[in-house]
Image (cartoon, rainbow, N blue to C red; front, top):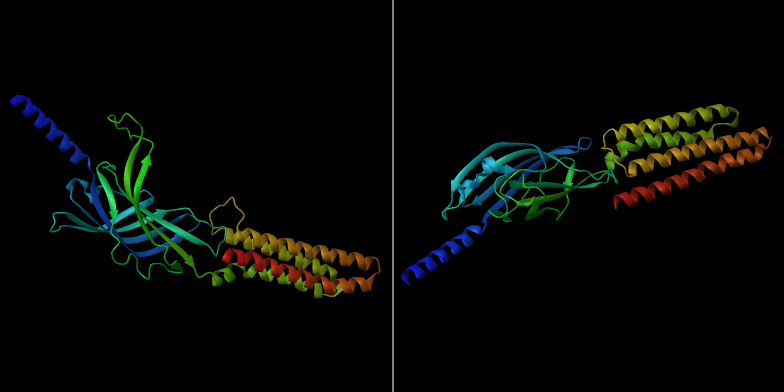
Length: 318
């Protein structure tokens, strides 16, 4: 009977120990972003300079070796310190310099707003052994975080979760091709002070349109000059579009850049059509009608062009 109780006691102890061991350890994580710089649209990347600190009990976690930044192209741990807190937890603080890859939303460029994301995991321990908890005390980024951009108020979000991978990463002990790792995620929204950039990018396009507009005020005796200026304006707009597109990643959607350049090309072509119609009236010896048409057509085209630009730009900005 005593042996039976002893066996039962050992079984309960082992079961309790297994339950305790199955409880994942909590790692408390905090972050402070010093700067976001080198935002490169064409290569879909940006650089991030930050401080990261972690508090945990299990020394095997060793984030100096096993820290994983899934969305990073390169990670440079330039500095880290390790200390022991009064409650026995390990306190690790490190400085990271990361080149992050991300996708850009350029539909409303240059009035675009971007969401930058930063995520960490532990490459050796899954969510059964380790879970993250966020340290939300204090500020999380410098007021000089970005240059040429502004952090959108209330856009900085810190969350934790579980990332699911439909693979066992070659582990023969796992019968199901499924693993889960706890992660710590940061999201920050940024926008730019864009009106000066807009003027810088599109001033060549608008000057080209104004040249085609001025063509209507050239005397009808110099009709060839009208056609020459309009054709030159067309090539200038196309060249301006190539310059702007070279700074942006490829996109299958129709962006504001495409819309404004396409609109300008259409109106310059409309100007060419108006000039051709005016020439036809002259050839038909309808000089008064030609003169009246040349007085009205440019102002109608200009009014419609300005209104459409205001509509598309306002829609992108707001």
